[in-house]
Length: 259
Image (tube, rainbow, N blue to C red):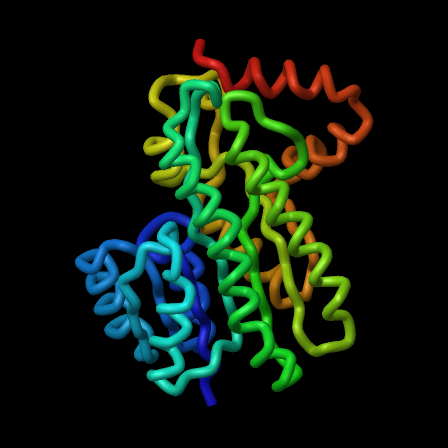
């Protein structure tokens, strides 16, 4: 019997690549994103290419009550979730004092509350069946504060902390929880987040969404708790533990600032 995977933020980037990898490995899919036309296009592609079942739910997870809506829709489909990929997320760039308060609220809702609520809604069924996998997409931003992206970095630190804690709670349950921490990746996130050229983008070769998703999928299969993609990213994540925080803050501020 096929297993069913739920992927949020599935219309592009890492989320779309996760959908393809899960389809390649025989999973039926439930895909969530905000744009119906894009979801329909992806649904048709996956159906024709892999011959699996693909369901779509058009939903903006940055809105309160959206997770309950998703859960009820899936209950009506009479489906059980075997793999949950909490990939949806947004960022914002600029000094906090000038930030848009509504945009910051939507970021908190999507990056933290939706991820937490979806995990809480679908985890009990996994525990009851004594099998299941959850993948929460964080970032290397989780390992230090981020001037000029203060709220975004903080949300990703939450995802790392939350995932690590519940992974410990679930030991022996048959359910694993993995936190994927990619570095800068060649997705729409970069274009939509940064309003101008920043030093971090200059001359750097970003990872492809495909290689990040493949790495995350393998880590999820192994039940790895924290999966940092890329040797340099792993090195940097460890290194910040040994640096004075004022050094880390100035370095991140410099890299995030415009040239």
